[in-house]
Length: 77
Image (cartoon, rainbow, N blue to C red):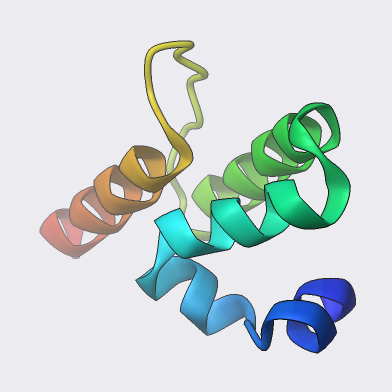
């Protein structure tokens, strides 16, 4: 996250609010392959923090996971 903050002026909150921009910055910073690994780790941790189960789906993009998780979290609260 330090690299994204320094290079793209993006923090964790912005990653949640603007997931498409976060992925773009991440992929530019570390490349597509490295980004995929980090995206999965972030998504698993994010879902865990919200008390949700993370189920990987190859047809789903990072932003969709974030929006769906937020929606599920707010609907269950």
